[in-house]
Every structure is written in structure tokens, then in C-alpha cells.
Length: 105
Image 1 (spheres, rainbow, N blue to C red):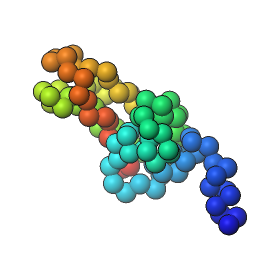
Image 2: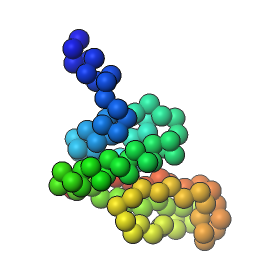
Image 3: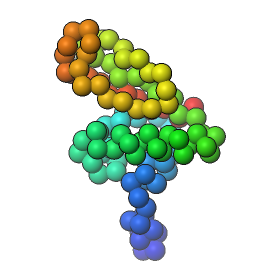
Image 4: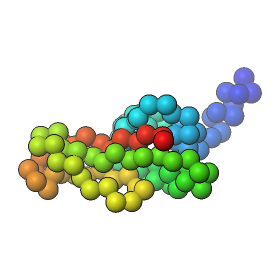
């Protein structure tokens, strides 16, 4: 029971950091959002980005595989250790976007 109380006290950011530290398989931003109880990925982007900085300081490496267009397979540019979910494809203008995938190295 004491363990359950400790789990409830953790912030969203702390739960994301713990989840990313312990994940064994690649996970999408949507998966992480669902894990923390959010119905939309956009609601946790800032928390994920801050968690990535925290993990970097702990020497935990997380690779970000960029978002892709579901219609034309356009791969969005990923330049920094930062998660972004594009709203539409610059090539075909479709709004069907696969979210970025995070994988612990």
C-alpha cells in the first residue's frame, strides 16, 4: 500500500523519466502519453522534452526516430534532442502523421 501511495505522488515528468529509463522496446509519443493518462500526445510534449534533458544529464541515451507522413512516407527532419509532432506534411499536405518514436540505446 505504501508503494501505491508513492506512485500517486510522482509527477507526470517523473513518471515519464522512469518509463524512458526502463523501456526495452521503442515507444511512440502516443504510447508515452497513454502511459501517463493523457488522451493527446500534444499534452505531454513539453514533459517528454524535459525528461529527455534529465536523462541526458543521467547519461541515459534516448534516440528519437523522426515523425513520418502516413500518405507519402516523408521523413521529417530531426535535428535536436527534442520531440515535435508536425501538423501536416510539407510534401503532400496530408495531416496523417506517424508520431516520433523514442528508443533507449
